[in-house]
Length: 321
Image (cartoon, rainbow, N blue to C red; front, side, top):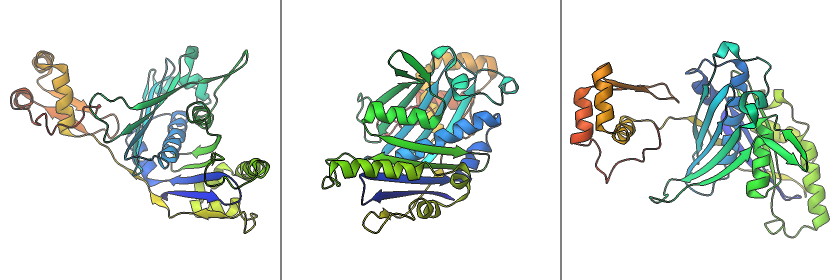
C-alpha cells in the first residue's frame, strides 16, 4: 500500500485524508540505520508531509525541517505535489547513546532550541522570490504555561492553527514497514458548506472529530485507506454521507543529480575545490537522502569550472542535492 485517499463530509464542513505508505517508506529505511525511536519520529513526519502535500494548490514541494541541539540535529522530509517523497535525519550523538524511550521533545527540543519549519516551494518560483515558510517552536504557550510538544501530530496541528488558521486534527503511526495517517480539517464556513447552520456545522465538526478519535495505530498501519474510511464513517446517514475521491499513489524519489553536485562545487569556488583535490585526490560526496555517491576527479572539476557542465540558461537550482 502506497496510497492517499481524500474525502469530504456532506453533512459537516470537513475534508479529510488517509494515507498508507509501505514500500516507499521501506525505500527510505533501507538506506538508513537509525535507532527505532528515531525511525518512528521520521516516519510520523513522512506521514505528515504526505498528508499536507495532498492539499497543495500548486506544482511544487512541501518541506518539513526540524533542527535542534538535541540528539536529532536535523530532520528533513520533502514531498512534492505529485506525492513523490524523500527523507533524511542527522544525529548529533552516537546512535547507541540515544534513549530508546526518548520523547520527541527530548530528541528534538533540547534546551528549548527545537524549531519546526514548513516550507512551501512552488516549482515556478521566480529568481529572488522566497518560498513561503512557517516556523513553529516545539513548545505550546498557554498563557504563562509552556507545554512541550510531544508528537509530530501535535506539532503539525499547532502549525496549521498558527499559520493556516484552520482547525486540524491529525493521527500518525509508523513502524519499520508502514506509515499511516489520518487528517481531518474544518473547512471555512464561507466555503462549500456555507448553507449549513453555524450550530449544525459546529456539531458536525465535533462529531467527525469524535469518530476520528476512534482510529487505532493498528488500523492505520495495517488497513487500506478505503477500509479505514468505511469503518470510521459506517454510521453516517445518507444525507451526512462521506464522499471519497480516487486514491493517489505515493513513491520514493530522490532529486539528486551529478549536475546539482556540480552546482555545489561552483558555489564552493575553484580555490576550495583545488584544495580538496590536493588533499584527497578527488571530491566525493554522498546524497543524504538516497546515499548515492558522486565522485569528481581533477578532470571532472576542471570541466565544472572551465566548460561549465550546465550553462546558466539550463542550470538547475542548487538547493542542495
